[in-house]
Length: 375
Image (cartoon, rainbow, N blue to C red; front, side, top):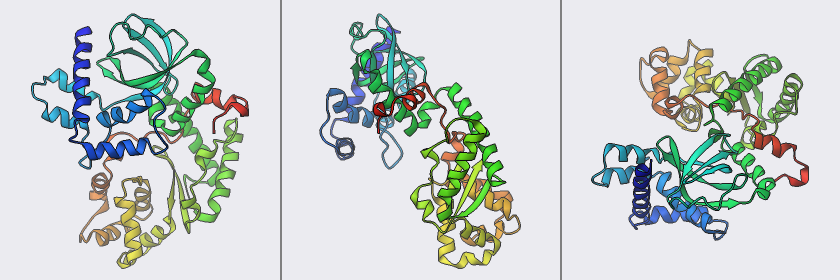
């Protein structure tokens, strides 16, 4: 382990030097400006955070990271080095409770994903001498084989800081559900909860797809959430399911609670229904632009297009033949390939649930007296 750790420390030092050498000056400056938009960093940990983020996670227009460029240009790397470096594009951020200190290693429990990490430091055997069970570390970890390495400068807090840090962990979990789902137990809990919520949705709306006037969406969602709370127990699922203003301002909105993709809101779905009912409308610019946005927008799930094609099997071919200027296009034969081409991210990995399980941090935060909750 120590030889792997020593090599990791060497490579980490080289990677940071490579990232800050000046060759990426413009890109690094933009990252620093974004991180420091609210003012100067409060401490060393905050000061180094954007540099560490830039070295590991920032993506250039090509999609590459600094890690990718380093691996491509650094001579003399063996397979183990390359595998280790490429694994560093995965960074675990969190609020960690110290569970145990064992010489050069420390066991950290992440309040965000509720996993325990065995962690080493690049500062040597005495790096964790100041830590004790019950204290807290806010920071970033990168893989070290089956273990982990502190990345950047962590912030250390005493046990008494728990009341302050639990709301932070809860907010991180709510804002970054993918981080929660690193834990397979929490992922399965979320999928089970999503299945239950979908059954409630179908019970309330009569189907897993409902098309509403935009101005009616907020009221309908409040009714659904009340129904869901009565069926499942506990308070309504809350503000996370409130529709955004862009939806309530739309003429029509489809609410689709897909079995895999979860609940989604889709503006102007009624206009797309008109198009699929009458494919000749594809010659009109407003219809073409709307369908093109749904097809080519990488932030739009493939679900609404899949549903439209399924609801209008007799006209889907003509609609897409007109949009793509491809006479003879057949949705049944080429539809999935078309979606995969424009939305590869939705097919590379299975979609994550759109609901978040009640982790310990979230539960503790929500049950705290109102005066102790963060806003």
